[in-house]
Image 1 (spheres, rainbow, N blue to C red):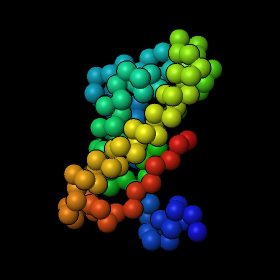
Image 2: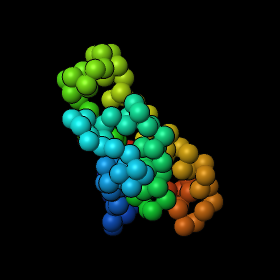
Image 3: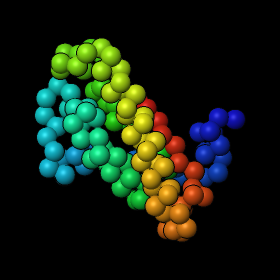
Image 4: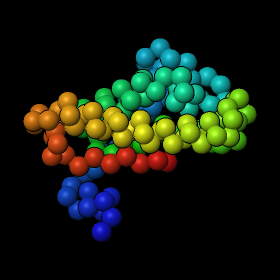
Length: 125
């Protein structure tokens, strides 16, 4: 069985994270332009990681990567090389994974968050 199916088998309700762009704006970050929130993969990866962690603390079982609007052609049109563009898309998964790992370390034993006993998934959409 896939890990996602395992998660669904364990829970009646699975909670997906919320809006990334709205949270970036709430932090005072600009999301205007063709890349929208994707520009913050390069400019503010720490902000993206914090948003992921905030959603995990709020009870999300699944966090989505910050790859919306992050395409090779779009990133290249914004001035990134092809290699940099691929690297930034990969970075979205790494940021999400780091957020999960930090959340688990920081919440270990915290029954309100589920700590290390909670199943969390990262998905790229």
